[in-house]
Amino acid sequence: MTIRRRPRPQWRRRITALLVSAAVIYVVAATAASTDFSSAWNALGKQGQLALGILRGQLEGMWSGGALPAGAALAIGQSPVLLSGREAVLELRRTEEEDDSLPPGGQKPVAQEDENGSPEEPSAPIPEEPAEAEMPLVFADNGVQARTLTPASPDGYVVTGDVYINNRSDKSFDESIFDGSFAAKLSEEEGPKVLIVHTHGSEAYTMPPGQEYEASGECRTTDCAFNVVRVGDELAAVLEEAGIEVLHDATLHDYPEYSGAYGRSLTAAEKAMEEYPSISLVLDIHRDAISDADGSPYKVVSNVAGVNAAQMSFIIGTDGGGLEHPEWRENLKLAAAVQQRLLEDYPTLMRPISVRNSRYNQHVSPGALLVEMGAAGNSLDEALLSARLLGEALAETFLEQVQNSGEGK
Image (cartoon, rainbow, N blue to C red; front, side, top):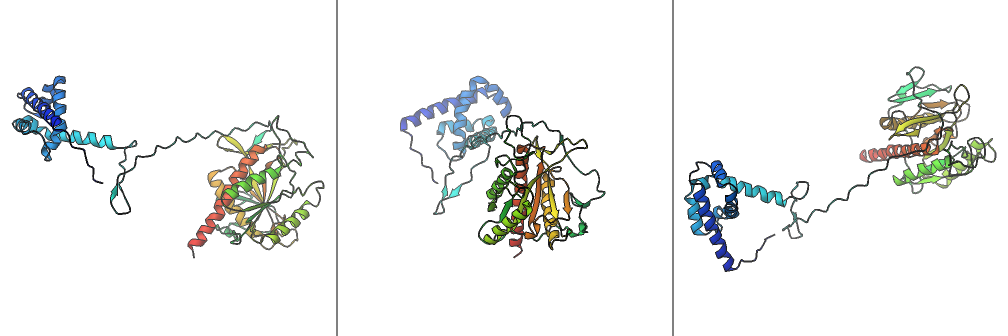
């Protein structure tokens, strides 16, 4: 862009010429005995700064073809000291002009081009709004003794990466089956991709004083604002935020009758998957119940951002109990992949994977997992935090798989 300046009136030019000439005479006289620019600068002192300032405002124009009065130019030309210092003065002038043109932060704006290819004048930078400070998490103490359960050694476990697996089934496997791959994948069909169910939906937690719920049994409630259904809501919300559609069955399959809950939740899962063939991941959300040798309950925790998150564990079923379940190893491989991702960021968040003879309805999909979200002694806040972390890990695992499969085409 060409910058056009309005012409100065003639009387301003005359006054400027007189001022410059006077300044030149003063500077030449003051520096006559000086041998270099540094001594000349000292000789000027404070009284000469005004004169030198006038000169500095015109020097650049003189050596670039500007309109410095001829008398002033002649006088300066007769002063070797001023001539020797002209480059220093000009450099100072250029530095000041560059500093004045820089936006906060010191970066020069890059000229853009308009639709005709002509450079546009950079727009003024928009100041960034200060980021809101994140409030630290604060959970009320529910008074239950806390423990962090981690394996003391690899003895008795199958270990792959950071993942410990406790094989309590009659089936055999070793670490060679774990290569990071798994059969489960997000369906490309329209509709929900994840089904969340609760075989034991009334399972609840130990609430801090003042946050109690109406109990339907020991650490159980039909109030879905306090039981594991609420944890499923949190998990679903995280997955939805990641763009993964979720169907959440909030039915309490264990109430009013506990016996037969797995049969009822299986019927619900099969019905949902028949209605929505797009479902490829089935999550059955529970919570554990753990007591010490004296029968006193305790909670299992991992420190996350300065607060307790409920330790989680995957329960993987097999066909060791005699029921058909040919793809149980794929469920196990998926659990190991998700657990590895979680442990990389939260090393104590996951308890060892437990493999058992019962199949826990996991035959419905190679992407079926049973998750214990803490224990009865944990608070709901602790379980909700873990649900958010699990949701993020699941989303990252499956979305990365989709990305990798797309790159491989």
